[in-house]
Amino acid sequence: MDLTTLAKIAGGRLVNPADIAIDAIGLHAQELEQGGLFAAVPGSRVHGASYAVDSKAAAILTDEAGLELLAEETRPIIVVANVRAVLGEVAAAIYGDPSTDLVVIGVTGTSGKTTTTHMLESGLRALGYTVGLIGTTGTRIAGRWVPTSLTTPESTTLQELFSLMKQRGVTHVVMEVSSHALSLGRVQGTKFDVAAFTNLSQDHLDFHHTMEEYFSAKAVFFAGMAKQNVIVAEDEWGRRLLAEYGGIEVGELHVTGPQRCRVRVGESDVDIQLSLPGRFNLQNAALATTCVAAVGIDPAAFAKTLVDVGVPGRMEAVDEGQDFLAVVDYAHKPAAVAAVLDTLRTDYRVGIVIGAGGDRDAGKRPLMGEAAATRAAFVVVTDDNPRSEDPAAIRAAVLEGAARGSAEVVEIGNRAQAIRAAVAWAQPGDAIVIAGKGHETGQLIQGVTHPFDDRVELAEALREVQR
Image (cartoon, rainbow, N blue to C red; front, side):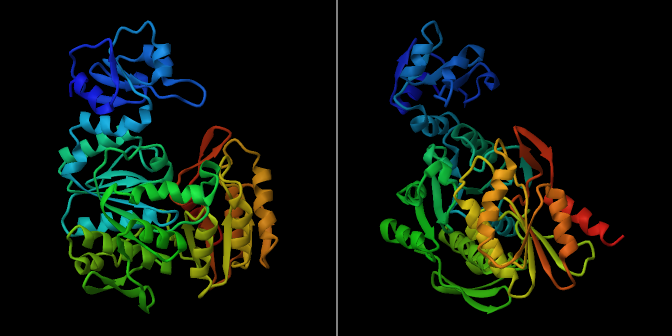
């Protein structure tokens, strides 16, 4: 894409104009080679333009503040009012607007995004489609993993991924769309066929501050960004989205047996059966089934593929021959903790290992403790990812909420020891849940990620008690 055309797409002015072609774009100065466009955005401490000298990029995209830092720069500079506001459209243009040639289904909401997208990927692949997956557990192209770090990558990376997917024959992309991504414009430039909504409950209020702001961030996705909206309207937020923006409402679940339900999709009644426990997973499956129907795929055929679908770190059973149920789940917000425990306590006496992440919404910590202790019989409060915070202070907030329940509650900061305490507590026929980290393979403490996988630790603890 020639630079003059890119400047017009960005709605910016071109300083030091030159007749050059751009074949890549990125936010990291040193990663771009000649022919690339360095997007210099303002940071919380340093403006990205400060790093332009370290880049081999052919040109720079920045704002007025960035231009002031580039007074000695001789390379072409596209100057815009807000870099992030145009970044997605510029990136899409550079990579040939690849999402227009893909069927893109985006899923947003507080809980269920990962499970729903994995269901979509698994079912679509089973029906013979070549699928790309983007989300919390990483990026997968036609079944092969590609390293990415964010739930929803930056728009520059996202458009490059779409281009790569197109080259590899992908027909359908399913992706998680986070509220952060919507607020920061990461999905601008992406042509969505479906915008899907799971639910909304307290999370990320360190970023959005109030539930109304959190809802507004999500609502952007349904205000014309996709050809069709598909919405679960079981909570007040879903009902608001449906009323304000319209779309296809996911039908009511008619439960017909253990992890079986029937749901109306268009003009058909579709039967769904899962091995994954929990009514919330039936709801995720109904959403996925409605999404595929919205893009012209037979919902009944799709639903049949979901019987044995599994999702890493989501109600993932760890079986070492013990006589009780042991599962790992990513639940790290009050509503998700409640949903997992409500599912299990119907049939089991339940113990749970729970903590809360540092440098994140502190208001949800006591609510998580309360959700655990009012539902479980045994609660071990431990460390999750403390990040830069004092782990003891985080545990104290969780314990404050746990005091409102009737469970036996113990505090064990060491997560490996906490898991072993839950295993030691369990009796035949009980269930234990190791909550919070799910698929993660590291524990972040004071800037250092230490290897830690709940599934590995739980399996080892289960083997130890049987020796």
